[in-house]
Structures are given as C-alpha cells and as structure tokens.
Amino acid sequence: MSSVGLDRVGGRLPTLPALDGIRAIAIAGVLLYHSDIFWFPGGLLGVEVFFVLSGYLITSILWTELLAEGRIGLKNFWKRRARRLFPALFVMLAIASTVWVIWYPHEVARIRGDVPAAATYTSNWYLIHGGHSYFQSFARPSPFGHLWSLAIEEQFYLFWPPILIGLWAWLRRPAKVAGAIIAGAAVSVVALSLLYHAGNDPSRVYYGTDTRASALLIGSALAIMWRPWAFTSWERRHADSPWLLDLLTVASGGVLVWAFMRFDDFSPTTYRPGLLLVSVATASLIASAVHPNARVGRLLGTKPLRWLGQRSYSVYIWYFPVFALTRPGVDFDLSIGVAFAIRVAITLTLAELSYRFVEQPIRHGALGRWIERARERMNAPGQFGRRNAYRLGAAAVVTVVAVSGLAVAMAGAPSPRAEAAGSSSPIGGFGRPEDIGQIDFAPGKQLPAVAIGDSVMVGAKVQLRDRFGPIRVDARVGRQVKEGIQRLELMRHRRLLGSVVIIHLGNNGHFTTPQFERMMEVLAGVRRVIFVNVKVPRRWETSVNRVLLAGYRRHPDIVIVNWHRLWRTCRGRVFGGDGTHLTPAGARCYSKMLQTASIIK
Image 1 (spheres, rainbow, N blue to C red):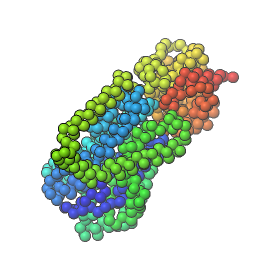
Image 2 (spheres, rainbow, N blue to C red):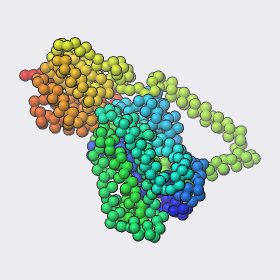
Image 3 (cartoon, one colour):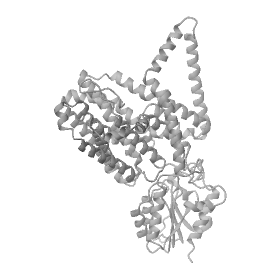
C-alpha cells in the first residue's frame, strides 16, 4: 500500500519505504508476543500499529480522490481491497482447514465455526458472542484465532468510505472533518474504558470493533491533516525542521519499543492508556517518516525492513496456523528460542510463497487474465467446452461438501468449541466448570489442609484426597489469581483456613507482586503456606515464577514447590496434549510432592 499514488488533488504520493519499516516493527512485535518471548510481553500492541497505518493509508487514498474528483468510486475501491486481501486469506483457509481435517479430525468441531466467520470477516464478533478468550485457552489454538483483526480492518474498509463522504458533504472543511474523526476516536476510547474491568478477561475490549476503532480513526485524522508530499512551498518552509523530525522519529519509535517491552495482555495500563499511547506514538512515527526531509526515518526504509514490511500481510495470515502446530513443550521439546527460530523460518517461507505466487500475480491482474482466457477457450469450437466446465464446477462443489460433511462426522463433538473442562480433556471429566470446586462452608468446621487452585489442581482432586485424607480442595477451571484471593478472604472470614494452605494459581494469567503480598496478609498465622509454581507453555510462565521466587525471598518461612522443574522426576507421562494439565500418573506425582511439602517437622 505504501506505493499507492496520491497527491494534493490528484498527483502521486511518492513511494514511502519507511511505512514498510513500520509494518516490519509491528509484525515483529506480534511474532515475539506469540512466541512467548519474555522480553516482549506487549508485542500484541503491534496490531494497534497496523490499525493506525491502515487508517492513515486508506483515508489518504479516499481523501485524495474526494478532493480531486468530488466523489469516491466505492465500487472500484472495494474491488481493489478484495483483490488485495481475499486471495491470500482464502488460500490459507483452504490449506489450514485441510490440515486440521486430516491430522486433527477430533479438533474440527471445536473450530468449525471459525471458518465461515473468517471468510465473512466477522471473526471478532463471532468470538465475542461465543465468549472465547484470546488470552486463556489450554487447548490447541484455532488456526484462525488471529483473524479477528482482519475482520476489524475489513469492516473499516466497508463502512468508512461512505462515512467519510458524508462528513465531507456536511462539514466541507478538512479541519472540521478531522475534528469530527478525532471526536469519534474519543468515543471509542471512552467505550473501551467503560467496558474494561481490571482483573477480568479483557477479550471483549480487545476484540471489539467499537473499542479498537480509535486507532483506525487516529490514523484517518492524520491522513487529512498531514500530507507533507502535497505541501505548498510556504508550508514546506514552516514544516521543514529536519532535527525536529528526527527527534519525533526517535521519540515515537522509542515509545513503541518501550510499550512492547513494558505492557502485557492482563495489565490494566495496557488498555488504559496503553492502546491510546501506542496509537498516538504510531501516528507521530508516521508523521515524521512520510515527510520528504525525514533523515532518521529513512532508516525504516532499509531493505530488510522493507522486505518484511511488504510481506507483513502474508506473514500475519500464516504465522498463527504455524504457531498452533508447533508449540514448544507440547508438540516438541525445544527451548522457546530454538522453537522461535524454527517457527519464524516456516512462517516466512510460507509468506514468501503466498506473496510471490498468490498476492502479487493477482494484484497485477493475473486472475482477470486467466478468467478471460478460460472464457475464450470455453467459447472456442473444439476446446474444453462450456458443458465440461459446468461439470468440473459441480464436481468441485460436491467435493467441498463431501469433505465438510466428513469433517463434521469425524469431529463428533456437538460443541463448537470444547474447553479444557470437557470429558475429552486431559484433566478428565469433572463436570461443568461452574460445578467444580463448590464446597460446603459450614462455619467453624476446620480441616488440617486447604488447597486453592485452577484446572491443574482440578485434575488432581481425587489424588490429593487420597494422599491428604481430609483436605478442602477449592479448584475451578479458568480461575484467575484475583478470584483465588477472594476465596482465601472468604475462608479466613469464616475461620476455615487449615494449618496447611496450598496455593497453585497463575496457570491462566499473570500473578502480580501486590497480589502475592495480599495473599500473605490473608494467610497471616497459618502454620505452613505452600505455593506451587507453574509449568504452563504460555508467555506469562516466567513472569509468574519470578514473582513467586521473589515472594519467597521476602517471606522465607513459606514453601515453594518447584513444579516447573520437578515434574521431570515423575514417572510415566505427566501431561496431556496441552503440556499443562495432568494425566492420572502426573496427578499422583503432583499430589505426592504437595504432601511431602506439607509435612511440618
């Protein structure tokens, strides 16, 4: 998109290599985040960078056409967008769906609703409606779980052009139009603030078109107010400070890198004000990079960054299916660093193939030429023939329907998305999540041991009772640390804390130092407090274990069970397919370790 032609009222926008560099930064952040690289927990904000870029470039195209022609050719605009985006996406959907049907037929039922949602660019609302978390899932991720962001962008491409036409017809001045767009961005920011609740799963605000529109609108407002390639000579003299442009480039780029390293998926500051901060920083970086006299900004246009930026769409399409098939610690036993290198190499290879043989040929008219040649051959005497073409098309439809039916039949499970608590889960059939861990809070009934945990502990409930005898096991699938604290507070209030309290939380998300200290306040007076660290192939694993280790150093009287390392001493297969939940053999070993740690000498 960076080479699209624009000017003040109908010339051309010069090629802007720096924008490809910004795309490269964004996709690198996304890859690092999903690789669970500890140093870049905020890499998910790379999507916000993409949104601002899309808003800027698309609105630049539309605005220039509107100024030059007095109208926007909606049909041609949507046709260009479809030709640019649809082919690569549909090829990936076809290939990934085939892989899942052949290799993972038992998982097809869980993801079968994702395909039509992806094909219709409604993935984000489909996931919101189904209550699917972007951050908390132990099953193999859907290969299409990342397409929520493409859905938001496509919705923007569909609805934004008519809205922009209406704003121009109503306001007639660029400054007023930009002001109205900024007001819309402010409404989106407010919606995010109202819908976000710290400590809860943030998937609703992360997926929502309404809560993420601010980035697209900030980029759009910038496109109207900042078009330096079309400045008059007077404007150039007053907006031509290379040192100021360099300072802006360094500062805004530094903010983005800092955000990738500082924020994370569950931190309240990521959503308030992290997303807005990243949007503003991205807009500032774009503003400096597109100026003809930018100097430091030219570094963003170096060949390696341009190469990656030009293929960022292909990389984004393919990385999630690849990562879903190559989970370190689950699908193969490699370190995160080695796994990252392998996963990125596979992703870049597939992206290059898509870019070279699907995207570029179709963008330059190959599909239209092929259709025209096929039409000529069908109509030519003695050639393939229209009837045979119809037969081939019918056969293709029948094949697709047959494969789809086979996939549904093989999948079996009626639920569109089985979660870890299901009977086919490696933790075993312990009923519905809301039924797990319900206990009798009879006042004054004190047991010698209490265990607070999540689905990992749910999978060892029977073995813990075999080992401990009378033990109160309060464990629930999907439990966050915040809820665990509330359960401890309730038990303390009702005098139900035993002489031994075991806590195994953090498998589903972050565990912060203030939360640890609050637990220690609630547990004051308990003879033995045991924390179990986490073995979970997710990006927060290292963070949680570091918080627990630091807590032990501040409170040396507690006990830390190093499950992250000691599971290797167990006999037999310890984990199910997700690398976290316990098999029966793993549950026996787990409960034995906890019993040993609970003995007070």
